[in-house]
Length: 357
Image 1 (spheres, rainbow, N blue to C red):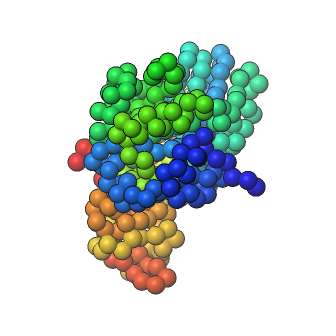
Image 2: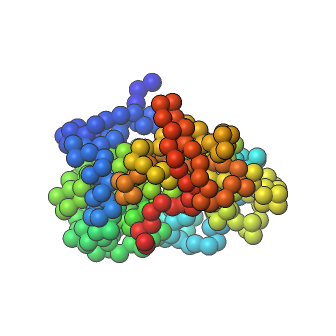
Image 3: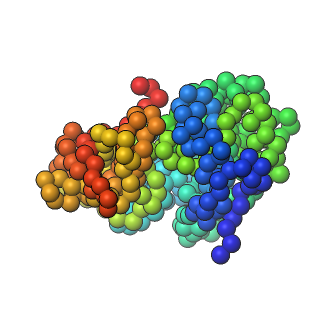
């Protein structure tokens, strides 16, 4: 099956990016500057990522609000038009089919942003509920550029005061040089910033405008190490079949006061009985990266495995996330066992890094 290319693919080629397959897309993993430098610039300055692989499912109709309230776990009554919300789509067993961002862009109009590999599953879930909604996969209509870092708003100010002033988890229509785009105060790095949805035909123009204004191009390799430091889960690693929001320490994503939703009974049961396992962080005492699939060993007994791991450029040591029995306490010493070597590590609370530190 042919891989999908971002509207910005040619821009990445011009910048000599390292291209690799990601969730069915050909995406830039890094540029000649390298993942470590791209990571560091995001923590100290301003970078931009092409995240056009993220899905977009447009939902319109008078029943859109009530249907989304039932399909997803979070409570839309906590927000209003012009805002965004993180939420989960569960199955009846309470397991996470996908984690999404919902943009409320009109009175009865929403854009759901699933993970790339789950766009059709989310689209199908919406279609199966009712025929009264206008549900459309709009992924290929736009490109999405994430501008992230502590200086991201300073860079945006040179292009648009309106874009620079979009608050965290707010969504606004902004015009830059007569080009209309949607700007959302969201991201996946643990830093301040926005994500911009721009029509496909204007994508290269905006990318180069941002680059010329001081945004440093960064690939998905840096985006992954940044989200790992920030303790943000990745679907397919920390979220997915067999994993509930409660196990993932994301009870806040589930509203038990809004009424019924898919998977509610299973979540109620797990809240009553308590989860048997929990997502935890693991901090190595060496620079050796922790890697996905490595075993977590306590007193000679395997208790879990690393779901995501890497070298932390900010901490200068190996870090990882994984699920272990809920009775294992924070600060417990464990061994992370690999094929070639073992690492001494400590169980820690997430995140490893916070921009507020």
